[in-house]
Image (cartoon, rainbow, N blue to C red; front, side, top):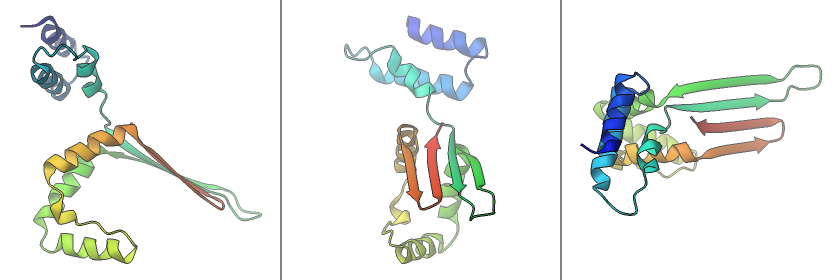
Length: 143
């Protein structure tokens, strides 16, 4: 057993990481399989994958009214579960695709497989989306 794998198991035993995080770290260690260009930080980067999507909306109130703030924190597990549930509901993809097209978004949800979803969600940890319009500010981040 490598020193890195032993360290992951020690972190698990100490309760500093969850079983899922330990599994992911051990998989990364196995995948790198002794590559010279892989650093020990590669494994730790997996542990920092986003667990929540935060949506913050700030709307300036009209004169004489107060500003409004909405702050939503959605677990990534809920997003994954919702996508999987959507595949089980007959006609879900067709109706969602039609609604998205009405709003100018041409996406085919039926072509989104679990591997693509996982890839997309893991990449979301690196994005920040800011949308500003007159009196409104929307910020979407992953944490």
